[in-house]
Image 1 (cartoon, one colour):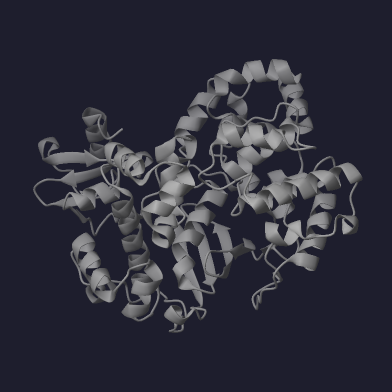
Image 2: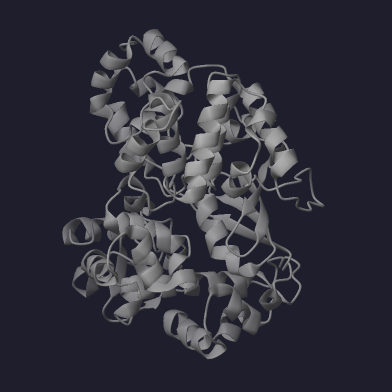
Length: 499
């Protein structure tokens, strides 16, 4: 979009927050870059130039605006609706792969050479993988500087910088302030969460309280209702108006509490290692589908006169996703042809027997969901399920454990769905629900789902899978969101915000 100068200028002049994250405005006279909704007086059009990423702005020598904080914009919805090389690379960078494994590791996960990946990102985003990861590190560092009393050396380490000197230089370059000056600008009446030094040694830094932005509108009922209604005891819970769950992370584990608010999602994170902060935030945003563009989605679905009343009644529905793709795939198999309660019971037994224990002084979380390696070692005879589903379960966890089936954020949606359908016991419903909620395919559709067929019949839509699929072609590429609106016609607990 950044190449459409006229449209970008109109968005900036109207301070349209819907375009935050889609592009960034760099002001040639001040050498500052902003989000489109920046509250300051817009510059003259001739002084504006536009970039597709914060990293590209920084690489071109522009500093982040201190008023609108463009680095905190919601992520571009482009990376969630596409499955090409650039989108897959951006999802991996957000998951911290460059910081952990470098560009060779990123390229290996994508199946391309390092040169091909760099060339593609430079062409589309104006910045290579290192610059994009650097911008992400700077944002994480700013977050820690402003919300914790951690020493700067610990923050540098936690944000992924190789040295304190690099950390200092980057903060000065990006924000035109030293780390100490950035911290001194934090309002004194803002409560800082308790934090203990020692992040570099892997000790728990305490809880961090964050605000996760999103593009309005956001309808929280089905989003949090779905997560709470299907919560696995010990791993997830709804407590005091928040969805809480344990997180398995690259350097350790964490516990997150997510609370819906009118203009943001309140996020309270407790991590065993602060180096996991960026990854934890990325996975929580992905779980709640916070980078979606609800206006574009709802406008297209509203064009169908039979869907329009559902959209108008509760616009901004999101697709409840997952923080762990392999976990969700296992749970999808456990939920085949059984009730939500039975699926939770099966999963809870696996968690109690094979999950890694965690300590949760604030609630009732007790375990991480078992890794696929641990589940692959389970004796099939101990699984209380029909023999055919037992075979499906054991085959899936074996394929996930040995890597022959990959469900990471870099997965090609079409190829992965084909591989899943090749496994015993995998039909279209199981493959598509994994594509929708684990892989993040916004166009995944469930025409054989009983709830969808019932809703379709009630609305006057075709109710047979073939006819409904044909009618749903007009909803592409947002059929996964149409599923949420159709499900919402039922009185199932997944559609209601818990009390």
